[in-house]
Image (cartoon, rainbow, N blue to C red):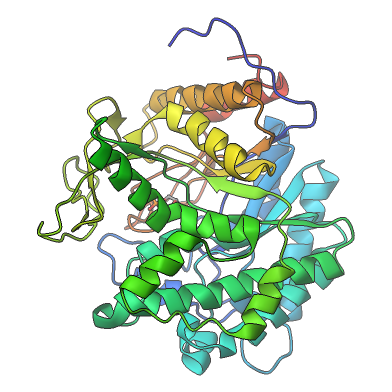
Length: 476
Ligand code: BGP
């Protein structure tokens, strides 16, 4: 791609990278942490590494922050492990867990790096799951409220950017994969009850943040995959809109307007679904005004018309890392997803589509006029240390270069974007492929079958990104 004119990024733009507790920390049995559902869920996935060690960030956090500092980071997005803070139902927080995050936050702040903190990234404590039936039981609402209030009180003096629930839309759309769905048979209806409880928890977090954190800002983190219509056939246009509603817009409208939109209310009516929304939920929603959107954007999807009598198909993600192993969903009478011949794909069949980044930022800005921070965007690949001891990742450099260029274009288009935090800082566990699907700017010398020495080796992309951010987006 030829860059005729470099886009201008605002002063104080937050350049950093991203991670999540269970994917990077390890130390799952240390200092009082108890198991999270994702620890158990992960064991059912082929090739998945045991996350008891992961990237061992728990023991390497100082070295990791040092590398961020050297790269010129001004932000770092990470998540807090709920079961480190509340390991059981005693209502007593675990001081050692609090100490770990205090140390990490202090280290970041000392080095001029703004912490951006996710409260929930797929890792529900097993005790919460057992006691309240996970996201299905309304008992989780008070437990979540207690947890987030503790986070705000303990860390809110230094953490001003907060994120509520990571990719709530994906957790509903891929309920089984991400450990939320407990019963396949009833998920069609259950998912909307579960979603309502998640919405209440999100709303509680927004309210508590504004109450407890001076100058605190909080937003949701939708997994945003823009949907293009396959053709200009009007039926494909509506199919694309349907897909957009059922995978993204229902959530984003809720976050921005604090109420359910007309599309979903009518969908529930037509399908005899009762999402069990209670008057007290509506009261919480009305007070939960978000300050910004976190945006996780990796790829795009393409939709086409699906006839009412079409054969239904589930979305089956590519779990092997060999191209061509993905099955697109067909929802009869609503939409079907399909190939986009205009974009390439990764080994896991994820569309490589930099323009989707510009499209997403413009779409969210046009609909909601709220500032946006990119909280995830990245390239998953098989990688190894080369004979020269370095890690060469030209495809990631190309991916990031093209994506960041489109972020710049969106800013030029008038969108308010305040930061870019790609996935991920170091290599970490992928949701389904452990260490064999690597995203990091920094290589972690470990594999799914051999822990090795966990050495940190900055990849070529780390150096490239460092130059780019030190020039505030001018040195490509
Ligand atoms: C996002 C999740 C992350 C991360 C990423 C890459 O949806 O928020 O936790 O894992 O996707 O996905 P994967 O690990 O499946 O490649």
